[in-house]
Length: 264
Image (cartoon, rainbow, N blue to C red; front, side, top):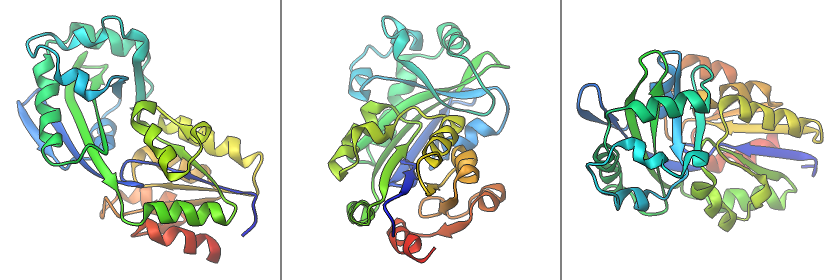
């Protein structure tokens, strides 16, 4: 395998097995084992907004405060990581500011995840709906590495492959990936679907082959742009058909990746 290859890895569902919970604010219920991207993509004008805050800080806040209180002094820390159609930060902030949701709503969601997942990876955010001018869902996720992840990254790097990450999560959530030997400057945080595509296209200018590895609809454009699009179904065993069609190869275990690249 030559040294002019790059692999771009999604994180949630690709590198980490995720447990996700959505607080359906319209119906007053918790939804477990959801796919965040599916909630976003089910209609236009939706976006996932991720406060760049440690969930522990959110959990320490008075539960009766409005959700908008998270923005006070942190407006620059509000990032949009995934959307069905483009939503501006200004639109998202405006929706959050007028929402009747409370801190308690986000705390309830995060507690449901924390009870099931270790501290390895946890993040929380909210889905805004531009048409409804409201927050239909609050989402929280926790995860832990799939078995063998460290060995996979080590094998790729020993083969001379540049390993990059493109994820919709915040850098706060992703910085621990340096423990796996991934360079900090190769971690692309808060990457929207189009941003992931841009990462792949940028790398293609300097590499003979660029491989994208992902598991969700937010990886669709990047899979299509890559020289080799690899869909992993280790987390989501029944992916949407258009996601399957966008990929060149489907794998069931991230440990299959190094061998696949040797064969291709």
